[in-house]
View 1: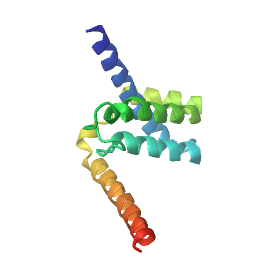
View 2: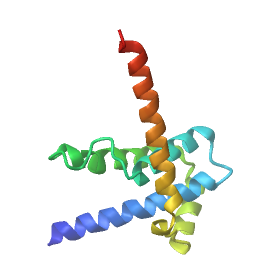
View 3: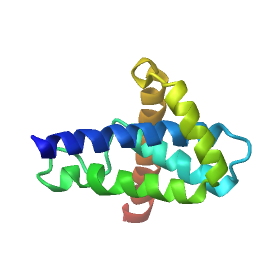
Length: 129
């Protein structure tokens, strides 16, 4: 049971960091490159569609175990410490109930559909002969 508790604690910590990153994104002092990386991080973490589907054995959870923490880590390295400290404090005081935000899911599904359409169109144009 100790392993499950550690995993649960780590998952809670990642959720808290995602919220803090979201608040750092809203801060006007955050630069453009960190905002781009934060947008990608939040988009991937909150997207209902994974790069590697979860039903694929072992590889399906690879993104949840490696890609998301790596994106969070990269985002944290790019955000100035002062802004990140303020964002963490705000995340502690003002939790954001993402379950009530259906537009996040709709927004990311639309992004995936647009990307799929662009990919399909490009492949069709390049390989139709």
